[in-house]
Amino acid sequence: MEHVSTTSPYFGVFVLFVITFGAFYATTVAARWASRALARKDTEKLKLSIYECGPEVTKQPNRISTQFYLFALLFLLFDVEVVFMFPWAIDFKLLGWFGFVEMLMFILLLTIGFIYAWKKGALEWHNIK
Amino acid sequence: MEVAYIIETLIKIVVILLVFSALAGFGTYFERKILAFMQRRLGPMHVGPFGLLQIAADGIKLFTKEDIVPTNAVGPIFKIAPVITAATAFMAAAAIPFLPQFTIFGYTVHPIVADVNIGILYILGVMAVGFYGPLLGSLASSNKFALISAARAASVFISYEVVTGLSLLAPLMMVGSFSLIDFNNYQAGGIGDWIIWSQPVAFVLFWIAAFAETGRTPFHLVANDHEIIDGFGTEYSGMRWGLFFIGEYANMFFISFVIVLLFLGGFGDGSVLGALGFLLKMSFFFFFFLWTRAAWPDIRPDQLMWLCWKVLMPLAVINVVVTGFVMMF
Amino acid sequence: MLENSIFVLLALFLLLGSAGMVGFKQTLFSAISFMMAMLALAGMFALLDNSFLFLAQIMVSVGAVVVLSLLVIVSVNVKEENLPKEPAKFRWMLFAVVLVAPLAIVIYKALTYMPHTWAKTGEGYGSLKMMGMTLFKDWVLPFEIVSVLLLAAMVGAIVIARKEPSNDA
Image (cartoon, rainbow over all chains, first blue to last red; front, side, top):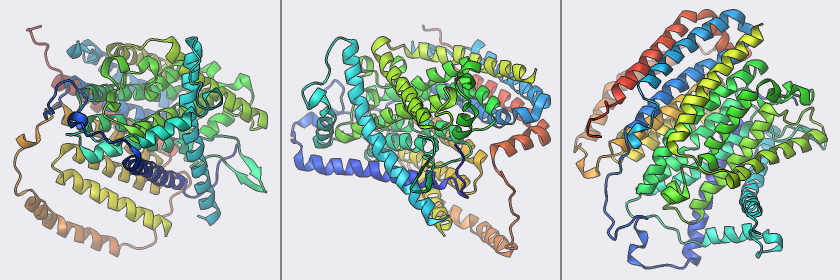
């Protein structure tokens, strides 16, 4: 298969973005109209309360453990490293040994950080036992 | 940019939207049928022949359910979250060549919406954005079960994104391009050229990560019915809930296409036989998603993180280094 | 023409998103405005045909930084009535706008004085292939320094974010 020859390859992405968001949002709007017209309306008092046990709806702060924040932070760093590795991967044949040794040093430093995280228990799920 | 290109793009987009929305509906039917057969049941039987009209019945039911936004929910975000899931799933389709190019009335059609040169990375990036749907939806519904689901979504999806990226590096080194079209052409020589033979580790890693990215059964933690009700979907009703599922099934289809294009030769030389084989291979991967659901239990979140950070990630990095050495010598 | 209108649309989203991130009181709205701004910026990079920046923007900013901010919001979820009162917030924002206005005028003037013949970018400009060749051939040392920086960031992240296990277990 040949490539498409066009000056602006991202045009399709943009149009798809606009059309999908428009279409699916329109679907929810249509569903709202249909349900207003057709659905059996329940007038029970606690119908709109959230699905938990307890009769009264109170507004509580929902908090999660900071452990997840650490996972996200580690992910961010690894993500940046992977983004750096992508251009290297497709130029691998052109760069030859020089690029490969460079990347080996990069991976070595990454591994040091990874081992540090492992030893410090940052990869454990321990707060949520 | 000429007018013909714009019209062609619009037609392709509408076709993709219609076909895959319908397929997402059929996906639920296949899933119920296959699960039923594997458990020696019949599955949906009563609506239409072999229960085929069950999809239409479900659609009517979803549209006519009462539309509920619970108290304390953050209204606008609660409403936009399912749209994000469904729309990003379909946006990922932009860089996938669904069929080999064909000529119709003397006009050559490339069945790909946007032939961007970062192809596969674009797909992964957009699929990664897709998890904002469950995340924002669950945060906006201010429900405790949804909150657990949000925490799991945040940690699981992003961890496996790193694995996907790392596992792709080795095949990328061999092909030297991100475009799925180039991946297909690289493997066009027949079964012997398929990347799966030279990169089995990368294939398995990518496949495992695909289960995590679509949130399917061994990693079905974000909406695990027997622990956290329906996770992010607990407060959703009607079509909004349905949109989450359209997104999930569309994602399953698209990632099956991507796996076949990356590792299993895609549509090969582009003949009719190749195209049929492409669809067959894709169907197998879609079927495998359902098969796993019938055959495997879910794993715990801590096991999932252990698998990702301590097994798959080191394996992926070692795979990259070994591939580098092999290619250098 | 089409490119111009797409640019205007994206710029509008970028401005609205940035303004919304500062202006909203409800933190979830701020987060989603942030995401919108980042997506619009990615769209602008795509408009310039710069694949690497588009990719980095989608994968790092949209895929990771916004999640990070969302997780901060959830892990310190404050009740709305406990948030600090900011009666002069919009006055401060107006003040900031007035403060940067001269700079904006200077940039506008500078841009209009520029010659209108732009340098043509070569084939494959902004592609990851070109980016990789530049990064790994001409900018080797900065690249390796970046890897050391990332290592330092990782160590720092773990030291700061990880609580010592308490003894009450």
